[in-house]
Image (cartoon, rainbow, N blue to C red; front, side):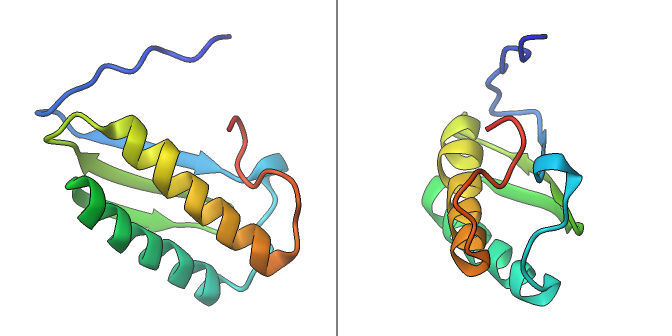
Length: 103
């Protein structure tokens, strides 16, 4: 089934989530993994001027609720946040393949 078309909104919040491939746990300790996500999240929030309402990191996925006043959900979520976290987790865990499903 194809993905639903993204509706860009400056008013309504988005629920962003991504799960690791095969539902496997991230291959790094959770405290280190949390540090990766928080550092990248801080950088992304400053760079793309999005509003973070909630963030939860689980063993194999994350959830966040964000608002994008500049309608830049694609640049923030996929192009920056997921790419950076994926590369940093892969570097620490010596993985060469994708980290997230469907990316």
